[in-house]
Image (tube, rainbow, N blue to C red; front, side, top):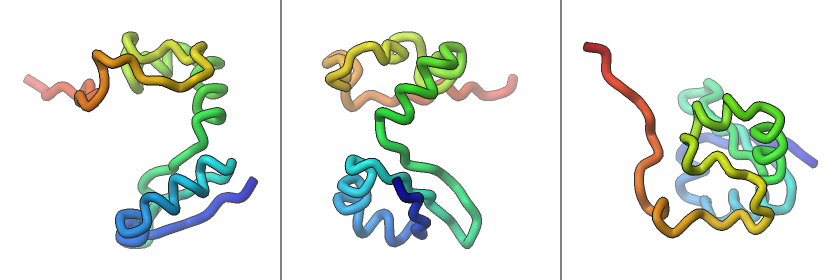
Length: 91
């Protein structure tokens, strides 16, 4: 397992290669203007983290998607290509 650091422009330009790297078990830290912005993790890592912290899973992706017991990793058809953001605006 390796952790790679890549700038946002590089990740955008090379997304298939980034996903290949992540699928092989490595993680990629994405930077923006030299500051860490995001981490792309292998699904096995995310599944383990979220199974150990169910409330985190629900907060991040909603109860509809929080079932990580499915080893295939398939996303339910009803949730594909739909936004998963749960942001709300302050009144």
